[in-house]
Image 1 (tube, helix red, strand yellow):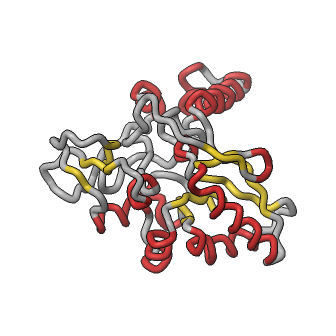
Image 2: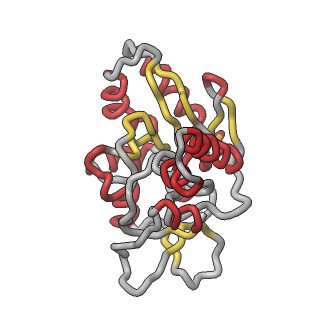
Length: 239
């Protein structure tokens, strides 16, 4: 992954920390929803090798973390009742599936005449390196409208928090998330957190930095996922 980021020019630098002397903090891994639903994953903070999640099937042949399936189904049903035609375009992916998507995108650029290095760099502008995509968490879905009704995105933006989801990559927060605007990408964080983020207009990065939820010191022996708290200075890429 580090090599991919170096080639693409997407190497990250941490520009803000809660504690100036802390290289990183840790997010507790337990059954508390405010722990498993708030795992932060991006190019600076990849999932550990061997990460796994128990999934459940949802509509359109997709699957998600089983703990969010009911909430997702309820949101989609209510969206339909509002007159839209939502469908899931992308949901949970394994690391191998993420790698395949990246390989396929790079192959398209090579066919267009790009060199190996140029093709990989171009592909990484659109596809996150394996281990750094929220889709591998099982907590993120891409939702589109079957009739291309963009009003559906407005409905989701206004209502998703009631089901525990947030618009993960807003247009005005690219400098914080490092990801280009994605009105279709929704991430489960739990109803309480989603409601608060909806009210404040924060990103997940900003929310975690402000609340310091479930933070464990870097020298703690408790198990957890590494969490870089702050904002990143890397160029936008789409997971």
